Length: 313
Ligand code: ATP
Image (tube, rainbow, N blue to C red; front, side):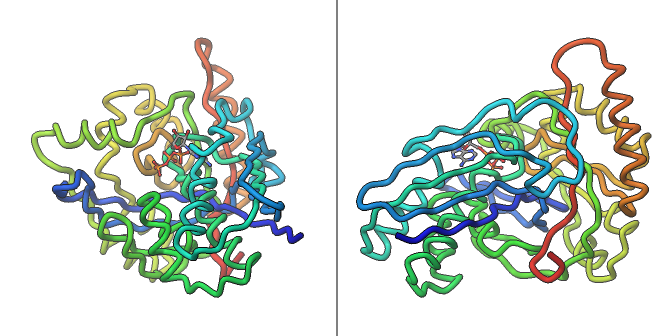
């Protein structure tokens, strides 16, 4: 009976340009996606028959986060066939004809419905992991073919690191990986439905253009100031309109010293780049102070982590 552990890294969009909506309802995108050290732990274990899944709260500080401030991940995904990790195992078995028993354990550190592709990362970890555990010999292209049928962010989550992503997410081209720059995530206490966010975007009188090529050049030059300047996300406006508190949090992150602040994916998580670990610690402390001054309502969670890629990880 084999057992294997995979890390399912969170992703952020350093740039996300949303284009036309296709007839099937999916949007064309052009994006630069980046993995983070923050990740879920996915354990795969052989079983005599059937699929079972156990999903519980992980510990961010043991899962790629240098410092965490806040309450536990507010919600957990389902521990049944609705979990994307379970669906990934089923799709893989259907595609290969291999039928084996499996138990999946997920220690969740990536906040759910946060714009950090946690579900897609778990599904990708299952595909990658089972390919190894069961010696299936599938290429990354074959895994991407299976993954794209489950979710649009899964192809990137299979490749990981830094990549230019296009189509509806299925075209993934490795890009110049930046150094492991520190980054601070602020996860406000609200969840965003990706579908609702895209629907609201379609109702805007005109789309919001983002210069993805500028960001790719900035990355190739490893120029953190240029990257900070080039951050952009077509979907940010609609989520900020829906949750005006995010506008205030963005300002607070900038004032605390983040070089550039952007919402990831459909949100609501905001990320801020910082120059180095020392400066990041100072910014992080300032943000904790700002959060503690907030009197009403649930407060955001803060994660101090770093950009991740296989080369530097
Ligand atoms: P995306 O931007 O790719 O839509 P997200 O980061 O905004 O992703 P996820 O955390 O991936 O959001 O969760 C989106 C939905 O998927 C939630 O409704 C959640 O219940 C469901 N889900 C299913 N499986 C998982 C999983 N393993 N981890 C997280 N969410 C999952």
